[in-house]
Length: 275
Length: 329
Ligand SMILES: Cc1cc2nc3c(=O)[nH]c(=O)nc-3n(C[C@H](O)[C@H](O)[C@H](O)COP(=O)(O)OP(=O)(O)OC[C@H]3O[C@@H](n4cnc5c(N)ncnc54)[C@H](O)[C@@H]3O)c2cc1C
Ligand code: SF4
Ligand code: FES
Ligand code: FES
Image (cartoon, rainbow over all chains, first blue to last red; front, side, top):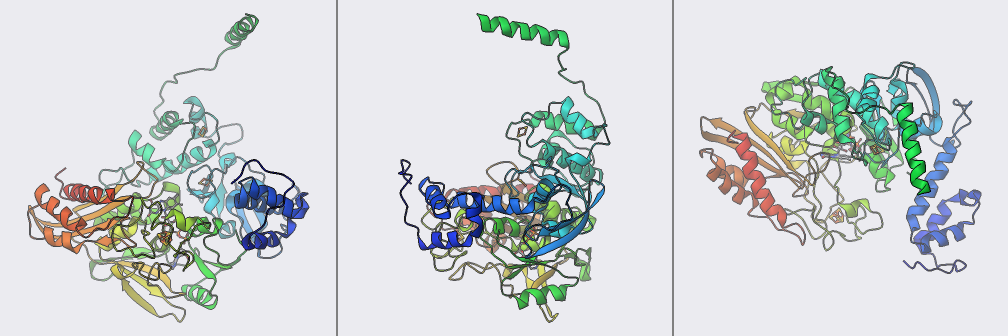
């Protein structure tokens, strides 16, 4: 599609595009005339993708209720469902549009933004949470199916100020860089520990007819393959899980700088800048 | 995602009735395939009938030394059930080769059989696709078809069935038990469950509208000692197969009494090779025997523009899977 556009021109819309515009009644509410928006987005090469994003934004806007009104119904009255579940130990009752997945319910309604949205379609693991103690993907879990279930997110792992051993181990072994995948990695790792305790097998288990409760690095890698890390923090992740799983502490290979060292480095920087 | 009505049912007949009554309703099990496709606007049901509360998750000994697996049992629980690990380890391996830990904790056996193709054109609503929209043409036939079929395809559709579990179920000659709205049950031999595309690629399988899978019945198996599920993919884990092989041998000393060879991700359904099985039966287990079986297995392959590699890959995968099954490597 053309990049150099005349912003005032009105592109012709196909029948499909016209139909789409009509299907989006609330577009004017976001402060832009529908036709202009569509024209811009289509000519700018973003096209239907942008429309989908916008549609999503509106759906999310409809989702978010005031913080003190968790019990209030979301805007869309059609197909509203009411569910009662436990989230990090607390009973929650939500009224939601039937389309809402657990990931969006957590982030947009319960203000639990620790759980991250990566791909939104099961391909990255960033949204991993525990449901009744088992690791699942919240982006492909319809909230409506969770009546009576117990959800644990990254926010629910620590006991007050006391980090979950897996959280502490991730810090100790530098199991992250940007941290975006980390809540999913940690929840996944916590789920994995239980699976290993039950003796569950994996794709790399040599003999699946016998129970395997002690995991090699290769086993940990395979069992964590559902969590992608764009920063490639995998060695630290495996080391962290290995320590918690085996209960054998390994020496940390790094430490935090102390105040003196920090001051020295800062000074060096300053001298560098003046050169 | 388009709006839909969420319906919770308490028994199997009610579920079948609900989907029979509404031509735009679909069952919801683990949701890992249907919700993905709804987000992509490929599937557009106006009602989802939630099966997850149905009492169909048991795995128990069946008649005549077999085992019955509930349709709503999770993939993880099926793969790790003591009865399956002991008597059908090929099935355990196949399930564990699929998806990820999280997805297998969600995915059900019924939903796994019903999963749709991973053809990129099927997923992209801007592209023509006879499976998604009959009559629009097949984007992959003359397009990028590296992951597509080398067996049994038609001019209308060259997609593959992408799943792993079913490849083992074909080798184990499972039966799929289904129930309709009036409560009548029938058993479909797994080999007749999925279809070839022919002129109706929109139909993946031979389920009638509204029929609910209630169980998978496994007959007594002689393949608990010599088996191997080999999956070849673009990365080591968490990816669909380019070629998979479910191999099972019933051994009498060094001689093969009976063999099963099923290839995955090469056709619109798991591809059982009777030719390879015939080339194995009565023969000594050796690399030479396996090589001739692999030639027989791939002899009828018809590649597309970008997937001729699947033929050589398929041959090598068949040999390797059989070598592992025979414990020669
Ligand atoms: C990122 C990713 C990677 C994956 N990798 C693999 C892989 O490597 N190998 C593999 O085999 N699979 C893989 N999968 C697919 C996964 O295994 C399937 O999505 C899953 O098995 C479907 O089961 P479900 O219970 O979630 O089905 P759902 O999504 O709930 O349902 C799927 C379909 O089956 C129908 N259905 C469900 N239950 C029944 C029933 N009892 N009777 C009749 N119809 C029913 C539904 O109506 C729907 O049309 C992957 C999926 C994802 C998202
Ligand atoms: S191969 Fe089948 S699924 Fe893929 S585009 Fe062609 S018709 Fe559609
Ligand atoms: S956001 Fe759920 S798997 Fe990527
Ligand atoms: S730490 Fe950045 S994606 Fe994993």
